[in-house]
Image (cartoon, rainbow, N blue to C red; front, side, top):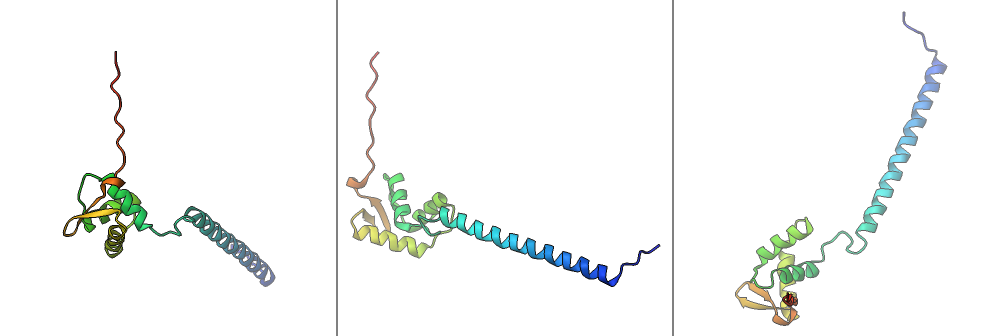
Length: 129
């Protein structure tokens, strides 16, 4: 047996459902704003961008004994950051570092960290027994 629902009851239920929908939409908007705030705080230092100079110099320091070309540097920066990088930006950054004399050119297209910029290797004293 089918239950009859009056017109007024249907209108009341629809109003209730629309109010629930509005609450849910407001909550979703709030959560989106909160997530953006969290993301903004976590990216505050870099605005969500990769600081190419810092990353490129870190790659050169980690690979101080090697000569690196732009594509190798790009792969290593991608590995460090977990983000895809722009090869043109990497090339421009290498040129910038070269002009600042932070790195030197070994051969065409290959660069290495300058000797004075290489990380110091601390030798441990042998333990006497």
